Length: 389
Image (cartoon, rainbow, N blue to C red; front, top):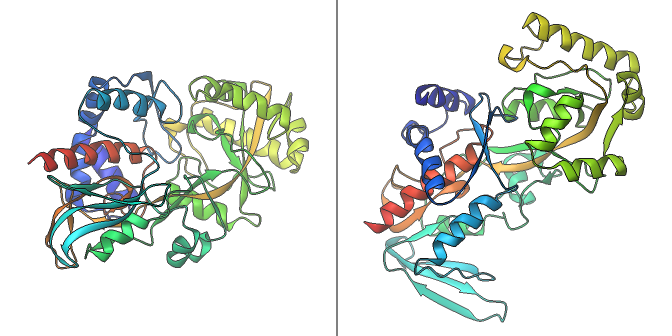
């Protein structure tokens, strides 16, 4: 329900989310799904609880990695008088005066190092993403994270956010940087083998579970970073591996990763433990205890009963090693319910709108898994509607 969604978001975000913005998201996310379908995005017929998602409300589009959204919406844009300029780096947002007046356009630079200006007829909408690829900036707010890698694009460095700050925009939650499961630094490839929470367990280098797998992402991050090597393994059986292959749409990658040794495969838990380099007896005990918890619908680490469904019992068995990486920055410019950017005096900056990860206040100190997409398409729609007015 919308009410449960709202309660989940407020609690998971440490009650630091802006109630009005959280309500706007939770009451309109379903409409965003319908809007995407109306614009040609096709979804898989499968609802699940993504890692860090806290409830089974996640759905995947049919194409992997965001392709479905981009392909469908690009086709829509091409039918309209919309020009998309690639290789065009925005270097400034222009306001009538440094801290007052209307935002009237942007300046950008092309690869030939020429500067260009575009005047805004209605508004400028900033939808430039977060700053998780900016190690120095993230480390400024949370020193534990500077040495980590990032799961994000190398372009997620926060320049547009700084431009809006220079115009007087208020920021919130800048020290809330979310990490997610990613590849260890000594591996070349990230393998998504920790997505479907009801099929796997996390174990450390001692072969022991150390955190409930359905915990919020900030809790999971803190648990990983507290481990001596800041690493852990996901462990699952053939049923879990098959779901990750088929529903996760990464079968070719996972099977290739078995050949390269990034994903470990074994016919027994004992054999798997040896390949992982963890104590055999400890891993066997961990799997046996977890399987008993599925029968009892009660987990010693507090995993929710609805995530105690699938035992790890059908060979072959699989494991992959993971570390944390900077992923999503919950902080950004403050916006109102219409996606208008608010200045440090609490006033709307005329002609300036923002949506997505460049904004703050929506996710509190921790984003629920899957809610980044819900955020961008919901507040993106409202930013567009506000611009038309």
